[in-house]
Image (cartoon, rainbow, N blue to C red; front, side, top):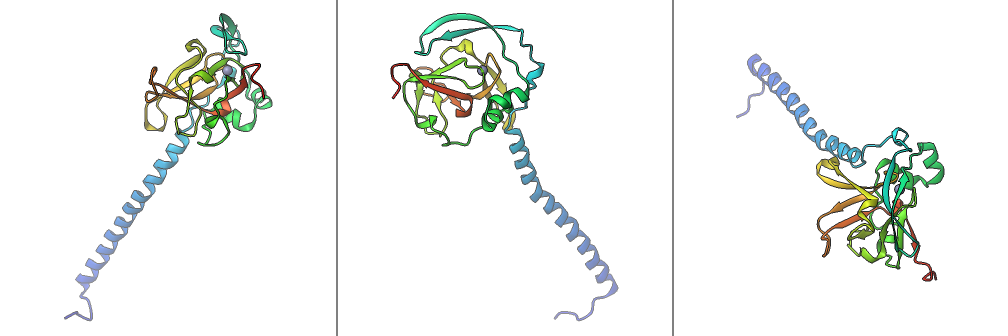
Length: 213
Ligand SMILES: [Zn+2]
């Protein structure tokens, strides 16, 4: 049988349990908030840290391999690095190209046309024109991003350990202008077993001459 009135002791107990309940509620709210805070952190971290290109020495010389428009190797060439201010890049690039190449952003999967395009031609850096990939090594990865088994020349790209997104990945950048291109994963097809997962916004494709339609 329930008592109609509570004794002062039971009121104190009730008050204490209310305090406990409130403090429990605060804890639960904190637990609820944590995953969202974590997700926010992931969203922020999914972009590679912006690199200040104005700090790069444009007079620095590097070696890259030159290719003609038919994708034929011309040979090693010493060139100056390309360094421009954000304002200069914004004049040259679309907003999406700027955020991908200069801020490390990522194109949404299955956007653009390159991921499902397999015409014969050369993919150059959208920022500096360095030859990066050939259609010869392109394959359909099913990921929604243009994918290649290998760069056209290892000398033309730089691979950097990327610890963002709480995982270890390998970022691929253009050696001449340090544009963010994408990432390379070790789950590609033979013979390299590599998958260069690239952003269309970082690439400029041209059909091999004579194959234009
Ligand atoms: Zn470049």
